[in-house]
Image (cartoon, rainbow, N blue to C red):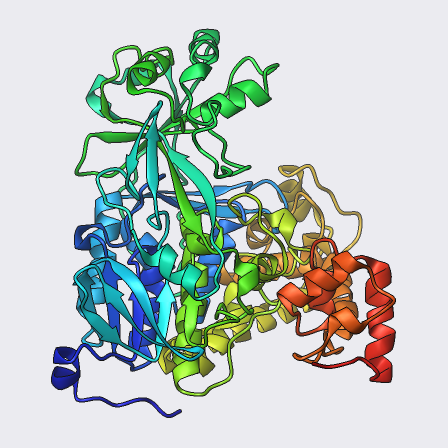
Length: 633
């Protein structure tokens, strides 16, 4: 691997770097740290240096599908899992009684600690230069990026630029019918960069998101709420050893009331969304409370979770209560909730509308199709969520490094990861609302579990250079133990004796004949821990026996999905020439021609996943590719 070498002090004075990262949120941090650890000089630009890796909405990481993204980030050599494990105040496995495809680890984070920990990683890396500034223009030489310019007119030179601007790009905040320019509450918007993108022929559109009010915990009556404790047996995101054991704190549950609903209904005329002041589309799977009341009018109540923002603050986050109604209305709404009758609002809720760049304009490497060396990651691609942002930022950073070194781009497949699924959806579909990763978006979700993310992606992280030899050796040892324990259970005989059936009776099970331990484990009520009761010599660590249990219990389903992957791989083998002239193909629809010309899929499988492309058109395209008689530009 060839790296670019510079005289550090001289090039810093000349404002010359290898890669520029614009934005220091979750995407920007992953991109910057990955590039720096790979050995190149990075300029990390942020609007406010105090808000690095800020969690401006819910101070939490993980949850359904998102936990798998965090584990994948860690397996590739990213840092979100490590930072979350170091700063949690609660850990909880969601859907623990359901199948492994939907089980999800969620951490309540200490917001301030999370930001400080991430900033320390950044500042302790000599390859990263932090700069508080607003990038307003991109510098281009023909069709290649060569640098950027800030609001003071200072030029910064680099061979690659990664844009991770979050909600700051032309951001505008709404509280009731009042609005002002801002990317987040108390932080200015990034003005000017959208115009620069437009001049380069890159399209932007608008999306909207929002966040609830923050209240003072000293004004809450928790006795009227239901406690929501974390898990006693802790799980972690990072596959690295020596995760810290910290004291945990509970969250609480309350509900909206008919009074809440009536206050909202009677004030919809003061909502910027309902008055048409906000044109961007909001997140479908995380709607505002007024949207919930209108869309689900028959529902008499909605869950509201009361979550601490950290140990060093009185601020409490009201999950599920996002709104853009006026501040005075918010007071009445919040005080209508049981336990919050005397609540004091520290920060009001708000909505923010911002520019994003539809990702159909990028390749699967997250590089612009128009400008070489220009990459996009996070909410600028039309996504919602810290985890989605971090995953994209990591891939964009790795590929920015690959680009300047002439290496092959890292493009993860749908069958390899949720990260690959996320990116494939973004670059092949016209996103109409902020994209959130869901387990239902993956057709291979039983293969792409949070527990086996290291098995799927650690070899890739090691090959890239972000997983060191010591971590890779630990990974290989874990895989050896999994293989050996599965073989051991296949060979271990459980006898149908009275002592065994006494133990099994506690789990509503009984055996009439001796059977292999792996056969018994396939029963719904039997877990590895039950087998440990039957045979105390079974003493594998949790991270090993969890995977062994899943592999054995779901063997038939896993094999079926592996067959689906093989079938899909046949379409992946049909490569589509980059310079194909779709307009010259007579037998496919005009809509399909337009979609294919815009997105430029690399394979027939990618073409089949594009929204609006018809199966019949794919069949025609397959025949023409097979014959090799498609016109080229």
